[in-house]
Length: 573
Image (tube, rainbow, N blue to C red):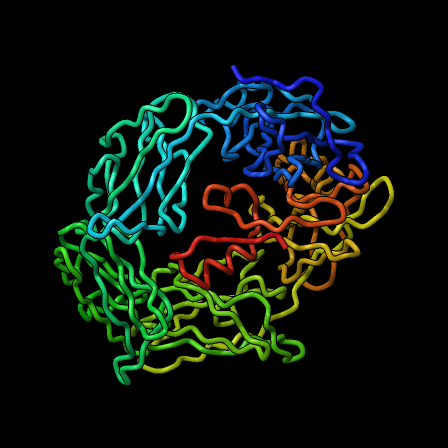
């Protein structure tokens, strides 16, 4: 049973305490009373649904605000200590049933929930190259529970040493991942083609203290080569080379350097496939097999036989066709540089997006000969399919657009967009009338489908434009106050049925006003626990945390720019 500290003081996270709807407290080490600033405190509603996370500061203090009166649960996560549910209920092997925690009753004011965490046990060791004994600091060591469930990852330092702490007594498994060597399960069990059954590894029995688990990795085989322009021989450093197993399963991607050279290592002896992706040229499967419309069946490529050394696979890509054009306002002819132009293949599958420049010009290249469709998206005007086919309420069937025929050159597709209708208003604190500039106002169509978000400015004003005439709904989100549906319908515990809000009637032109007056603390303005009064914590989301906070426009843009070889890593601005 974990020890609790009597008389634990609660330090205010802000200059002024919350007066309504918040959970706050301190996270500290039970043995030393020292603050813990790593990891998060996750907040859940009464059904055990994750609402968001708060990040302890250097003193271990955290606050999560904007909560309606009701019942909640909380747990620590990825602190490097033995995580637990409030109050003092261990998360064995990092897993626990949220609703088995002690319910937290939130009313008017701050509810204090402190955590005093035990160090727990740890798995630690060193990752080295078997041939040389030199340390390996790339990739990760993944730790799994007794059933093979991923708990988290440890990152080897420059000396190859890693530690994963906060484990309960029990059985675990471990493997290396993406080290650039031949990854393996402990102890010395190869992950053929980067894939292995976790529970086939040697179980790691963890008691109290530290259990040592070392890895000595073979170099393995590799696929390497160069990506160039077929007509000039110049290197291509954009996009990626994707590597697939013999069954066509994606293993990972290599990114060409400035000279066009790439390497993907750590492969077992066997057969593989490779293709280029999102290079801006006409992508292809190796060897010289076009990916028509950006799509191809991987296993129709030429198999690549990999031994214990390096196998060379070069790509020489043609420029291919492109769609270019200009996006302007129909009423004035002025360029529109906001939003994107999305390009679809003949089946209506999204291939990617082009971003208009300051003059409204855009280009989407690397297209094989064939038919395509295009539409504007999130421009702040009335978006449409090419050619001049409205996307009513922001939605349209892509294949109902006019096909764009692509050959070896550039096809022009210009867009002249109408202003459309808009929803605008101001978000303020009901108690004081002061503006709320945090969070978003989300706009939904008549069926309750999310269309996008508007961001209030420093004076609390927001605008969402480019809407067709029709019925819409709106709600605030992540403001740090008690969010609500328009008009004045609270979203208890951050959840509400969109179509139960008051309908907003938008005309084909003009502005419909929808103001929000939110209840909550005057000076308690959060974005799901990221912000505090007077300062902002800037934080990069890990792959384990990226689902906890929604940043639709930024994430969408980043994914479109990097295809899907990169995760969406965002800092709170």
